[in-house]
Each structure stands twice: as C-alpha cells, then as structure tokens.
Amino acid sequence: MTEVKISRTAGLLGGSEGRTFSWDKIRQVANVEIVIAGTLFTIIAVIAIFGQFLQTHDPMQGDLLKRFTPPGQEGYFMGSDHLGRDLWSRMVDGLQWSMACAMTANVLNLLIGSTLGLLAAEKPGWLRIIVNQFVYTLQSFPGLVILICVVVVVGQGFITLVLTLGLLSWVVYMRVVYAEASSLSQREYVQAARLAGVSRWAIMFGHVLPGVRASLFVIFAFHFAGLLIAESALSFLGLGAPLGVPTWGNMLAESRQYMIRAPWMLVVPAGAIVTAVVTMNLVGDGIASLARKKGPSIDA
Amino acid sequence: MSSTAETAPAGPQAAGRWDSLIGPFVPVLHQLTRLAVLLFMVTTLLFFMLRLAGDPALVLAGNDATPEQLEAIRAQYGLDKPLIVQYFNYMGNLIQGDFGKSLASGERAMGKVLTMLPATLLIAGLAMAASICIAIPLGAWLGFKPERFDRRGVSGIIFVFQGVPGFVSALIFIQVFAVNLRWLPSLGMDYGNVKTWILPSASLAWFLMPSLTRVVAANTAEAMREDYIRTARAGGAPGYSLLWRHALPNALLGAAALIGTQFAFLVGGAVITETIFAWPGIGWLLIESTQTLDFPVVQALAFCIAILVFTVNAVTDLSFQYLDPRLRTKGN
Image (cartoon, rainbow over all chains, first blue to last red; front, side, top):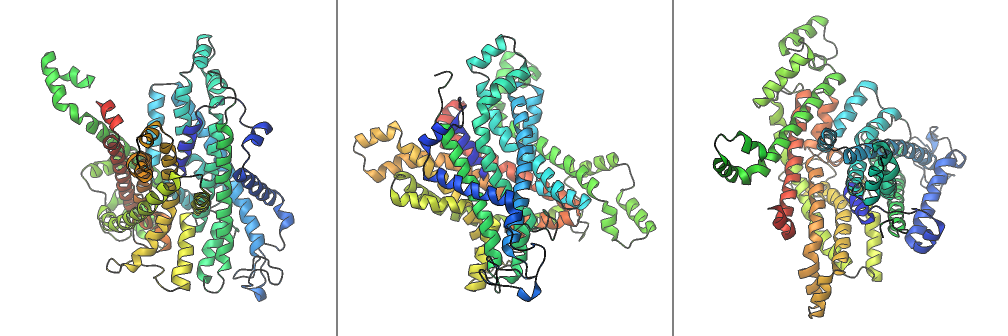
C-alpha cells in the first residue's frame, strides 16, 4: 500500500533541485504537522538511543508474584505481562530491535533499488529488460516463502530477517528512481555533460542521482514505516525475531492468550507500532512538503 | 509486429492483411508472453530454493525413517536423480498441468489450492467492496473543501488509521467484538454463517480504507483546482454537481490504480489476517505448506498467486484504457 502512496508523492516532487533542507525553508513551511512529526521523531530517537537508561526493570526478568499488574501500579507504569515482566522495558527493547531491523533493511533497499533504477534508466538494452523482468517477478512472488525457507535452513534471527527484507523489498526505490532518472537523463544539463564526454558512471551518480535525492528521502521515510510493519508482522507470525527476544510482534503474539485478563498486553505493543508508523508517515509527508518548495531550478 | 511481417511468406499486401488480422491481438499475445516468462521464472526460482531448504524425502518419510526407507522413497519419487534431471521432469509434468501430490496429505496439489481459493476471494471481495463504499464518498467529501476545519480533523484521524497495520486492527477487533462484546466469533470459518465472515473482511477493509480515502481526497482536491472546474463553476453549475459530475470521475481514475494494487495484494493471500482468524484461504495454506516443506503445494500456490496477481494487474491496466478517454485515443 505504501508503494502507491510513495510513487504518488514522488511524482509531485519531480526532480527538485537545490537543497532539500535548510533552516530558512523549514521556517517557511513549518506547520503543525511538521512540528508534531519532529517532536515524535525526536522522542522515538531518544528512546531508541538511550533506551538502556530509561528502562525501569530488566526486560527479560519476570516476577511471577506480580503477573498481570495493570498499568500504573507497583512501579510498572505500562503494566506487566503473564510472566510478570515489565511491559515498558520490553517495549523499549522492541523499539530498538524494530528500528535496527528497519534501518538496516531500508539502507540495503535504498542501495540496491536506486543502483538498479539508475542502471536501468542509463543503460538501455538487455540490462533494462533483465532488471524490469526481475522486478516483475519479485512483485508476484510470495516473498514469505523465501523467508520461511531461510528460517527453516538457518533459523530465525536478526541477520536472516534483515537480509531477506533488504534483498526483497527494494522494488519501490527501483521504480521511482527508474522513472525519475529516465526523465532526468533527457534534460539539457545531462545531455551537455554527456556531450562534454563525462563518463556514464559519473553522469549516473554525479548528475542524475542528485536530482532524485529528494524523492529518495521521502521514500526512505515511508518505506521505513512499511518495514516496521513488515518486521512486527513477521515476528508476530514467529518468523522474525527469535522467541524470547522482546519485540512488538512477539509481545502481540503473547498477548493473544490473555485478552480478557490483561488487555494492556495488547494495547502497549499495538500503540507502539501505530505511533512509530504514524510518526514515520508524518516525517515522510513533512520531507515531501519541504522538498516541494523548490529552490531555484536549473532550467527555470 | 515487425517480426510477423518478416515471417509472412508473400509480398507486402499479404503482410498487410496478416497484420490487420493479428493486429488487435498483439497486446494480448504480448501479455501472454509476459505471463509465460513470469510463470517460468517463479517456478524455476522456487524449485531450486525449496530444494535448498530441505529434502522432500525426509518430509515424506518422517523423522524416524531408516536410511533404507529413505532410499526407497527417493527411488519411488525420482529424488535420487541429479537435481537438474528432477527439474526437467518437474517442468515436463507442469506443462501437462500436473503439479504433483501434496507430501502431507496425498491430495493433488493444485486441487488443494483451488479448494482454498474461494475463501480468500470471498474476504478479499468483501473487504474491497466495503473499503470502496466507505472511501469514495468519504474521500470526495474530504477533498471537496479540504481546508475546512471539520475535514482537517477527519483527515487527521484517517492519517492515524493509516498507520494501523492490518494484523493490529484484527487483534483490536477481536478484543472488542469477540472478547468484550461477544457479538462475533473470533476465529474459524463457515460458508453458511455470515457472522464468521465479518471480522476477517472488516479488519482487511479497515486496513485498505484509509489509503484509498486519502488518494480519493487528494485527487478530488486536485481536480477541484483545475480549469475545467472553474469553467463549469463560471457556467453556473451548482456545487455538488461540480463534485459528482466533474471532479469525482477524474479523481476515481487515480483511485482505480490503487484499487488494483490493493486487490492484487489481497488475492495473493492476506497471510496474517487469515492466520489470525484461522481462515482457510491460500494465505494460510502458504504458511502451512511452506513450514511443513510441502513442495508441490507451495509450487502450485505460487503458480496460482502469480496468475492471479498478473490478471488483476492486467485488468487494471486495461480498465484504465477504457476509463480514460485520453489513453484510448493515444493507444491507437
């Protein structure tokens, strides 16, 4: 779903020249949404980085005498779970896990997708056909099967999850970069560089890529949200994080058996996922609206 | 086109006739070639990947089989031959429409997939219909005057809803409607009992609706700024006729693309929703059969999903040409 949204937003941007970020520009377009996005993003980043100092309990160590403590009682300010473990501390661990997964996979996606997109746009012929056919296959291929196979062979874990997500979900980047780079490479400044004898690789990375940069930032944010959802869904199914590692998906899966006794076991991880995803979507929207206010365009 | 002209035996006139005969079908042939290449790549990739993942003989024989039993099973199913020979045997059978039998139950693999398919199509269709019925009027209302205070509030709510993953809303629905209110069953599936359909399709619809609403709203707002709307308004067209007759049809074009993508996603099996609700569709079967390494079923599933996704995408593309007069004239 994010895919469509991204290509729509990216289409609005066009290839925007000039700096994507500058304090002047942020001051010009700053509105409520951007302020909310920035605040939420900062909070999440602080928790992700300084999580260890903010945890009130050991996330793995339970106190069976204090099982199912409702939020706000006995020092568990988000309550405790079926083994008496502190939900807040587990949520912090889950945040760090999710962010690490989504970030690594997203960087992999960015590198693979934009390189292939640039190559397909700049080098017509067999390479373009192969890349497009591959993208096409990937889109109707059940990626879950690949993940399950890898899990069966080498087991669950961070590397398995990140590599599978990283190697399989770069299609968004490829499509947007391909579309924008194809039109950018027809522009006069690229043609001029080509005539001046600049090498193909230098044109790709020095002349075309900067024009796509703003869209890449936007996709990065939206895709980050998509990867957060994918990661927690896979952990929920027992295919992502190994059992016992506190992640939002695992916490949701555990909560299912105690829905009547302890609904907060559902509310805490669900709230965490929704907050993180909404924040990343807001950040994406924010970057898009910053980038839409173009600087002086080269061909204006 | 050029290749048909080259292979045509007679002179230019015959080639022209041949072209005009086959001309209308060229796009269809082109699509079918793409589908064939796609199916070939999906099956080939899967075949080698699944063999890397595990030994079907072990799955068939169970964990406590003796080496002799394993040998016997390998010989019986042709698993003792080199992988590449197995691959060509498999592809040969596949071309004849034989996907093999399920390792787990001995049923025909494709038959098993096809019996599961209606359940998936049922919730996919219901969810899609519900999502469209809510999203289009809501999106039109939001996009008509997006700057109004009430619409901005609703837009904000929709934005938050968009951040709720499908499986989270499914769990929340179960918590509210099955656990707290006890209105609906939390899992299981029964074609005769409409109550069992509601929660799975509602949670899918809940997940599809926000993004569709946002696209319809954005497109409507964009269309309302166009020149033809200004002209119509200057001509005295009343406000809601501007929306329904002039702006919305254009806005729906953009929405059609998203509807196609969403439906393609759903027919591929809403894996998690089906797992949560124990809904016996192809998404559920996908997890089940891959985890038990039931190779023939996984292969048949992937084949089916590829065809379905391809068809939905092709139909979306075609309907665009039908819906958008600009594409129709440009196409020919």
